[in-house]
Structures are given as structure tokens and as C-alpha cells.
Image (cartoon, rainbow, N blue to C red; front, side, top):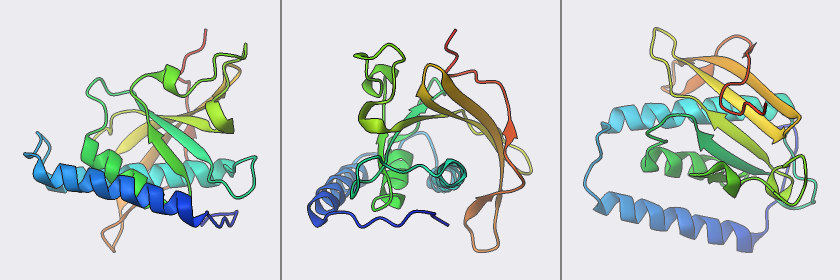
Length: 181
């Protein structure tokens, strides 16, 4: 599935595992949110499937050897991505990508440069809300800098093994969340 093999440092992996474990412990002690567990798990799997497909499609790699590529993730949903879904997505990519959900786009952009590239040579991924249907869809946008913004509509389906996967080719669409003009 991945086109580039990476061997992360033990220190970085242990730190990230500790962070994810702490978040999981905090979440299990918190009262349940508005979203049922089944829907949270489903949404996590859908976001993982589409981010995986996007990362494979664009062969996202880090310019610095032995460092995971940084994927900043922004939600285009006014309610954001539920915390448990964020934890699930980060945990799924733990040894492949350094996934960081952002509340404000400025957290991901390097404002010291005119074209506002993404910090640490990373990419900013924008996720629309999941549109329900027989096969749900969502718009995913990829921002590298002000002049390099791409958007695709992904269709996903539940697979026989209970996982979710992208079906068909992503359809190019006009960016809506990362409109730069």
C-alpha cells in the first residue's frame, strides 16, 4: 500500500504512543459524546481510508530522511472532527505519518514565506463532513501552498472485513475549503 518504507526512531514512536495512550485514557474516563460508538468507529475508518488513498496517490514523503511526513488535518465541518475519531486516526498512522489535527489553519502554515507553505515540509489535508448514502462520499483537499491546492471527491464503501475503502477513482472537484483567492 505504501510506496516508501520508513523506519521511525524509537524515541519518537514511544513519545507518540505515550501521547495517544494518554488521550485514550482520558477519553475512556469522559462521558460519551453525542455520537454513538458505532458511528465514531465508522467515521474513523472512513477518514483513515481516504487519507491513506490520498497519501498513496500523491506519494507523500518527508524531505528529511528518517522522519515521518507531517500531515496536518483540518475539518471543514463546523463541529470539527470528534476527539475519539482524531485519536483513532492518529493511532492508525502512528508509524507512517505524523498526523496533527489543527483547530486553526494558521497552526499548519509557515507565515514567514509569501506562498504560505505548510510547516515542516508537510501537507495540510482538509476533510469535509461525510455525506451519507449507500456509499458515503466526502471531499478531501490537499494544500501544499497558496498555488498548490487540489480537491477530490471520494466515494467509500464498507468492505467484507468490516473495514472501509475507497471505491473507484477520486473525482477532481473545485476546492471549497482551501480557496486561496
